[in-house]
Image 1 (cartoon, one colour):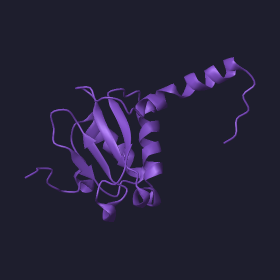
Image 2 (cartoon, rainbow, N blue to C red):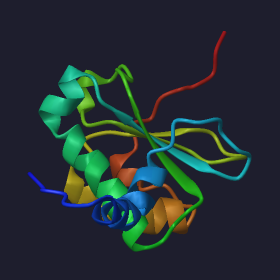
Image 3 (cartoon, helix red, strand yellow):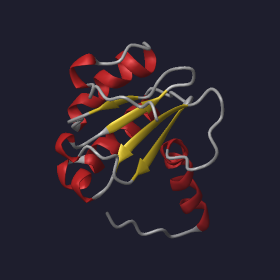
Length: 132
């Protein structure tokens, strides 16, 4: 999409209009009350639709004005057979790894898990995060 910007003021207006989406893609330090949504963006994830999944998370979270969440694009999560993969890290809970999260599944994850606190079992990849 090409946009011709004719003034600094016009550029500021564009920035303000999109700032809510940009702030969701936070790469800074994690705070204690933020939920992290990690999107696997390695080659296998991108080829399976991870970019659309990430963009849909950002758009829906911004639309719903949910500000206790940060969306973080990451490299390989390690479950290429289940791409696009999404990991939800909620404070005080074990991480939940989702598989085959196409853009059309994002709304359900936001409603049930992010807003409701209950993982979407039909999408969960049951793995063990414990280390030896």
